[in-house]
Length: 371
Image (cartoon, helix red, strand yellow):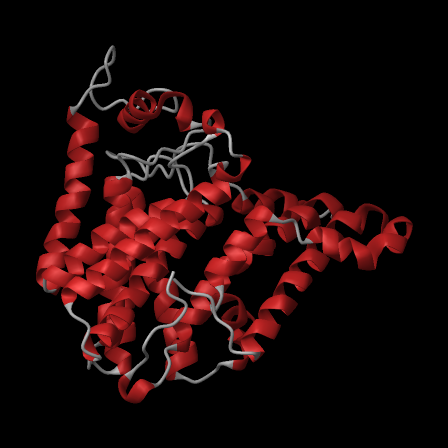
């Protein structure tokens, strides 16, 4: 994803997007492992009952904190698009040149997704999973969203968003899986799973998550982010931007929750109600980060997240191909007996510190990887 965005008027950087991206990546590259390790080491009933469940996906329908991480990642990609596209068009790039950039990023992200989770580096075609990773969902959503925002004004974009959400719902509600009635949305019987199994066969992999048919709603999630980015890039006042983001976020969550009674909130098949509910949370988070960091100017607390967010793609890939706890073990080798039950937690923290220090060094050197 684009590691930079053109900022506000006069070239001022929109730090809240970098911080929010870093906040999301923190959980992906270390925070999740730290919480689980802490849960294993701690005997706290509060941790076991209230915190750890939020660090796991729901089995099927419903929503927990960990279910927000992937849509937030996609939403932030969308939010940065109006800034990066605006910068390119302002410097004189033609639309055709911009489309070439979009296609190149789509291809690279898709291939990186196969590296991260598609077993591409095993060099065994029989084990390849061609469409099975968050980066590929981002790639597809980015491509769809790019076409929409480059050709339609905001009103048209909103119409397309509604059409995508309703179209996906209509397919799920009206098209039956062979041998079953229409509208089936169980773990083992649902239209996205049938489409994926039919088209990919042995290359689908295991698990409940589906990717091909939900590409429609992946595009919707990224588009919600892009519309939020257009609001932040507009000439509206700070208070108006924050208020509109909060109102839109609350409204989307409410509509998604109510719609969920008829079209359940299910992350593995990325239902339309899930898009709205998770997207509403993303809008509210963006409003809060923007308010605190870019409007009120309280930035110091977000520095650690910004360091991560500026090299999000690099660290995502790095942690998918290498376990940085191995480096952390060098410093904990002689402390295992002293740490006892807390050794796993210490390893998780040490691994994250190693990652963060590498990113901090790159940040200080102004070395940012983007595609």
